Image (cartoon, rainbow, N blue to C red; front, top):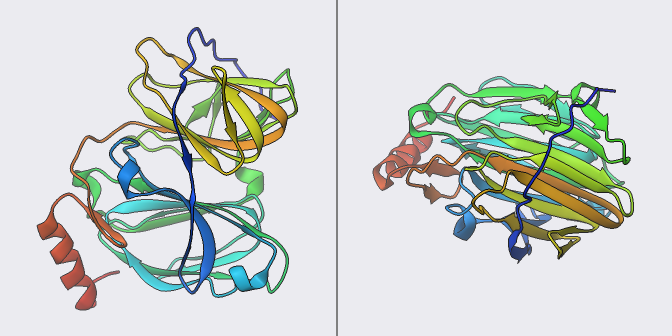
Length: 288
C-alpha cells in the first residue's frame, strides 16, 4: 500500500449544482445512465461524457457495443465488476476485468467493439469521454489496459480507501497522466462518518458522482446516482467530502481546453468542417 502525504485544504469547494443522470441505452441495447452529456460539456470542459452502467440482468448488457467509430477524444472505461473484451481497427485487443481500466485515444480515427465475456452476473462500471486539444485530435490511435493490481491505492488514517486512476492524490501518483487536460480520476470508498480531502487545481473543472450511499460537501448532500458539480469559487484549494453511511464515489477534475466543441455522435472536433471530414473519412474506410 502506498504512503501518503496528506493534502492540506484550507477552503473546500462547494456544490454548484446537483444533476440526476438520464436512463438511456446505447450500443446493442445496453442499459445505462448518462450522467454527463452535451449541455454540461462547456461547464465541465475537458470532460465530454460520463456513462454509468450497473445491472445483474444479462438482458441489460449482453449485446454490448459492436463495432463503432470514434475521432477526436479519449475514452476511459473503468470496470467495477464484469468482463468486457475490447478489439479495435488499430490492432489492439484486451480483456477488461474487475477493477481494471481501459484507456483508449481515438485520435484521428478508430473503429472498436466492447463486448461482454460473461453470460450472467453483475456488469458495473463507467465510461468517460475526455477531450483532446485541437493540436492532438488527429494523432495516431493508442490503447492500454490497466489490470486492477496495477492501479495505485492508499488508505487514509480515517479509513478512506482511494484508487488513483489518473493524476495525483495526497502524494500518490495514479496509473495515467495527460499533459494537456491534466485529469484527476479517483475512486473513493468512505466508511460511515469518514471525511476525505483532496487538493484540486484552482482553475480546473471538477465533479463527483456518487454510486453508493451519500456524501456531504460543504453541508450539501449528494446521494447515490447523482452528480455534484463542484464550484470554482475563488480561493478554494480542494474539496472535503464527508460520508453518511458506507459510500463510494468517483471524483474527477481536469484542466479546461477552452476550445470550441463540435460533436456529431462519436466524433468530437472543433469545427463543423472537421465533422464533415470525419464522416467522409469514415465512410471512405480511412480510419485505422
